[in-house]
Image (cartoon, rainbow, N blue to C red; front, side):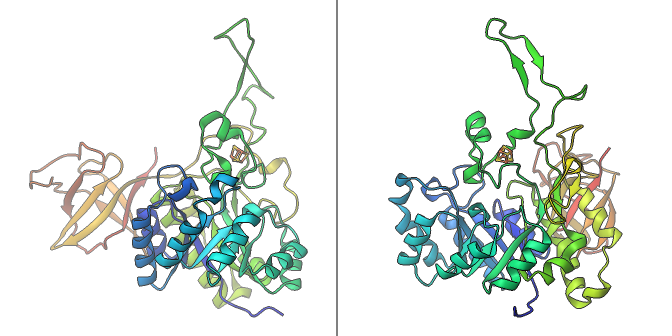
Length: 407
Ligand code: SF4
């Protein structure tokens, strides 16, 4: 019988800013990748110094940092691995996510005290697999996304080890990145966490002797979106996940924006708290759904949770993202009736913005008396990421998000 524990909310951290926002807006833990060894070759992952800062920041809030070491490793990846693993232990990260059995066995020998989590890229889809990992010393298994609640519940009933499951974010048609499309066409490897979601592109057909002449590959007049899954959203099903014994609810999306990290973490924080306090009375609030519509996403689906997805889990009309609001600025501080703002998207004096606070509440702000760093009056901030001040009678905390309705 599993002990009932309040599930952890685990958020993606693609860089230091996203890490801060996810934790400030309610995540209990974050997962991130390192740059060493080329395990995460693309920009936005953490250098050793950044990882130290990440751990310092998270531990200062009594929260956790997990590091992904979950590539499909080749021989050449193993040479530098022991030193890398020791450095992660010295930095004080809380656990490693691993999918490759070779990396697992080296980690067990080199850093035997480090908690090891089995990454979703190991594609664990049954209780026997979970037990096998448990016998190999796993402290947690991240279940494959391709499982129903009934399957999760049976796994929960028949095993003891901690179970983690994805609750929100993009779905992959190829079992969590087991696909070469992105690597082949963009050099960004889905097996190394850098997928460019190439499967959703609109492809055409050209004939060798007619270069430049493109023929549409189309199911209908709109095109072909045969591998264009909707995004996972299990918000209404948190009680089912808790009953299945899932102890960590994971949000996908290290490549998403700081706004996304904050917003999704905030919604699930409030929902997990409500569900834990009164599971039988749990009901999704409209304000949570509204919040999830504000950030960049595709239409939502329950994925495999209610059974095998059918055609309704795919989008056949477009591969574009939806969002009802644009992230335009980040509050850096407030003093004596003036707000310091870092611009993220064009803003101009007089416009009304929505302020989204770390406690999940909303306010409105009319941009008045905008001034640049030298104190000159400005109508708008001409440069991306320019810092300016504006009037705000009421205090607004640092890290509040400014956004406006998308047109
Ligand atoms: S290109 Fe598509 S199917 Fe391939 S790994 Fe990326 S999301 Fe998955």
